[in-house]
Length: 436
Image 1 (tube, rainbow, N blue to C red):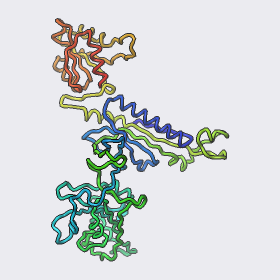
Image 2: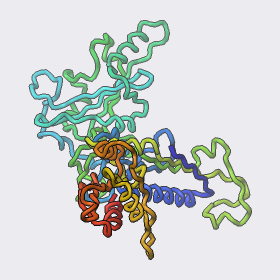
Image 3: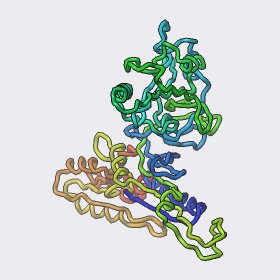
Image 4: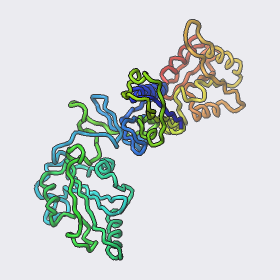
């Protein structure tokens, strides 16, 4: 991991530093010439109110990144938003009374997802709806945590854990802890279903009857709006085609990705508790954008940034590899070009090496990073090994050299295999590398 910690005197200077780090990270990923996403992110336990993640889109990723087809909105799933939909918008116009678990209603439209608090005291019911003709949507546990931070999403059977906890407390000698059920209703839920749940309809499975606890002893709480913003709860995972929250034209796309880097603006989250302060000479406050009139120490503004170097190498290697072997980008490859001579063409390999390594006069080109495979192994073995290693460009000196002074240039990533005369070889290879 490449870590970077920054310290500034004021919030404005800290934000300037933060943006400089972001731009530097972007230049680094641009140099890889690989697709990447910069996503707005939740700072989580690290703290602060501003952070961004750098992601490499790949089907082998473990994160979900949400991006808009029209504007520049990109966010990870923990922070991503979609337009709060009208009730029943993801359903086929659910009919009144068509709820899962209600007797006499054959069509199952309403679903419940259950979780539990870390102290095992509160059972969480998330109520949502789905169309009978589509796959049942998934609940976004990050959205649930935003409303109920005490959620423990790692428990596989929350009902059994909650039941066991309260059975034990009821049979003990200590004071009885009243069981609690928190009912969260998703904004896509039809209005009739919300009313049925809130009225504690007899057919709604809002609590496990097997507990043996009277329903009247259970503390029931119902929440349909975010306590902070008063917006209807949007508790389902974003899917392809949802509307963008930032623009009116765009639709959202969900991509699997691997996180490769992260930037955090921490402010005084750590400097104030640790008394990490600095004294400034009198008269410098205004110039630095600091509003204070005395000479007391000020807490430093902190930033925390990092790129997972080993993770980056692993992600690129795993994603770009094919059935022949590795397939490195130019800036990550052990060498940019490998020269492989056929039998008896070792002298020709030296000539080709000299031509490729020469830097054209009057240009700002750098010398190419070359290697000659002069091992005693057979020619087919060398070719297979070059593919396994993943050199960006392979220059083969074969049968056409003696008659036409041509080399075969191969580039797997660009799917190029072409015979090139020695006079044009350097410019041709450099043009390929410019694309890698």
